[in-house]
Each structure stands twice: as structure tokens, then as C-alpha cells.
Image 1 (cartoon, rainbow, N blue to C red):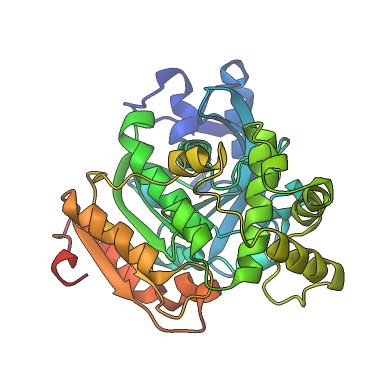
Image 2: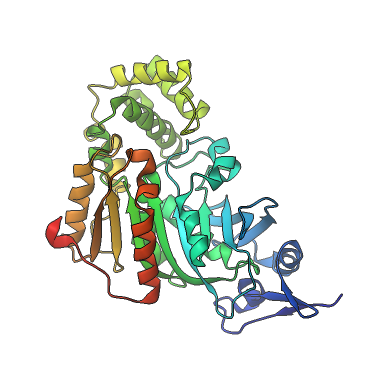
Amino acid sequence: MQIIVAVRPGSLFPLRAHLQEAVVETGMKWISGAAAICIALGATAAFAQRAGELVSAQPVTQTPPGTQAWKITSWTTDARNRLALVTGMVVAPREAIPTHPRNVLAWTHGTSGIAKRCAPSFSPAFWTHSPGLDGVGKGYVVVAPDYPGLGSEGVHPYLVGQDTGRSVLDAVRAARSIPGAAAGNRFAVWGESQGGHAALWTGQLARRYAPDLQLVGVAAAAPTTDLTENVRQVPNKAVGALMTSFIGHSWANHYGAPLATLGGPQTQRIMTRLAQNNCIELEAKPKFLMMAGILTVQTRLKDKDLGVIQPWARLARLNSPSTTDFGVPMLIAQNPKDDLVEPEVTRAYARAQCRSGARLRYLTISGAGHATSARDSAGDTLAWIADRFAGRPAPNDCRRI
């Protein structure tokens, strides 16, 4: 069997052009998968350890009908330009490779935990709890990064904007090296909760960090925006205590922020155990020890204000997404009954974006609450994303927010 690698000209990185948008021809049929990946990756070993570089793409054997998927490992950089290996999923339509590269939808997931094993790509629930996968039915390649430290080594930088946004952009870059996916450089980003924060940071960083990509729009459902106010005003104080434990453990390890400023040795141990031992499983009943730990932290931190205590206050400001217009259309969706992200904090962020000149679509969504924010707004969001790829004028709700 003769295998020919056909290369499209004009790649950003000419020496790896065969990997960027390659197709593999065998006889008269176009194929993709493990053979193509092995050929492509074997030819680019010399380019390892560069941000956006694909290290491996393992085909997933069981996927929903009409889809194909790869579990990927790739390189990214953090805010200090240190390289790190990260993981994620790439899902594409199972059909003939199109004449032109496919548009890309980066799906940025909500909080799953901060331990390595909490990576969404590790969980069977990935297929049922990732509304962004609906984009495959629209013909998009869906890129779903796990974020640093989830599925990979190191402590997950929870709600750390630069590191997360870079990892999203680098995952989109890496997906272009999978021949069967046929991913192009035009992309939109959509996320919920923590993933809404990630989507906003992706929009904030895209032009500077990844000028080789073309971002057409940013969509965020129930996003974490002003971190200080999100922690202060969280409606469900028990969930807020768990969120604060995740922040505390993550930032203590990532930045060296002292947990001692938040509580004594016992409180610190409980926060650490909550962060290290628990992944978020939406259908699972909380364990007794988890609930006991959450209630203890909630009681002991009730008079603590992360917006005042240093260095937590400075780090919260540092990692809150900018209110300066990103230069691309935006969509923000918020449920007024949200019990984790205070709706007025989201609305205040949207108004600030409007004041800076953003063209912003604002959706008030109904539904069960925070956990289903992206699912409850998926139809409107995907229609909005389709319009961005089509180049239609972006709607602007700034006058009514």
C-alpha cells in the first residue's frame, strides 16, 4: 500500500507544514487516524517543546455517532514562559476531509477539581457534560483543553488567567497538527463557569499571544469575572467555601501565597484535603467527609475577605479578566437564579465591557441554575457562533444591560 503525504502550501511553520494541514491518501480514499499521526509526528520530532506543538494524538476508539476524537498531549507556556505538557481532547466530524480547513470551537470546561485525576478527558462524563461538543454537528472541530495540571503534572493553576488562556490557545494550535481533524486557524471560544473565565482570558490574550490564529468571537456562560466580588458575593456559601479551598491550595502552590493568612494549621489541612481529594461530579452525592470539611471551612472563613488580605487581594485582581474590549464580538449568558456566580457581578462586568466599546450579546437564561448554564443557553450561543464564522454583523445589547 502506497501512502502519500500531501502538503498544502502557506503554513505558518513551513518545516512542519505536512503536519499542520496534511492529508493521507491511500489508493483513491482519504483516511485519517493512527497511521497519519505516526507519519506526521515522526517527521517533526525535532520540533518538540515549543508552545502549541502536538506531542501525541491518540485516537479514541469509542465516540458518539458521526464523530471522531483524539486524546492529545501538547506543549504550552505559563505566564513566566515556562514550558509545560498539557492534555485535552479534539473531536471532529467523522466524514471526508473537506476542501478547506474546518472552523474550530474551543470548549473551555467548568470546575472539575484541581487534582490531576479531575481532568475532563479522564472522565466518561466528558461526552455528556460538554455542551461545546454540539459544535461537531455544525461541522466544527471542537478542541477541549483540560488546562495545566489537570491530566498533566504540576498543580492546576485554578482561575489563573494567563496560564489557562495560553493553554487554550496552544490547544487550538496543536489541533491543527492532526491530519484527520482538518482544523483551520479560525476559531471561537465558549466556556462556562471557570471555563467562562478561561474563555474571557483567551479573548484577552489571543491577539498578542497567538497572532497566527483568528479569533471570531468569545462566549461565556456564568463566567467568573471579578474574582474578589465572586468570592464575596457567592450565593451558596458552602460551594463558596469549596471554591475558596481550591483557590487557596492552588495559589499557595503556584504563587507561594501563605495559607496561614487564611487560617490556622487545622484549617489549612482541611482546605488542602478538600482540594486534593475531591473532583466535581455533578450527579454524585457529596461524601460525608467532604461536606464536613466544607462546613468547617465555611465557618472558619466567614470573617475572612480575600479582597483585603494580601497577597490574595492582589492575585485576585491580577487574575480577573480585563474589562477592556478584546476587539472581537462577545456573548455573555447568565441565569438570574445562579447559586454560585452572583448575577449582578456578571452584569457589572458586561456593563464595563460595554463602556470600553465592546459589541456584546447578553443572554438572560432560564434553567436549573449554575451547573447547566451552558446547556441552557447552547442553542442561542451556537447560533451566535455560526454568525461570527459567517461574518454577519454582531448584535449589541449594551443599551439594555
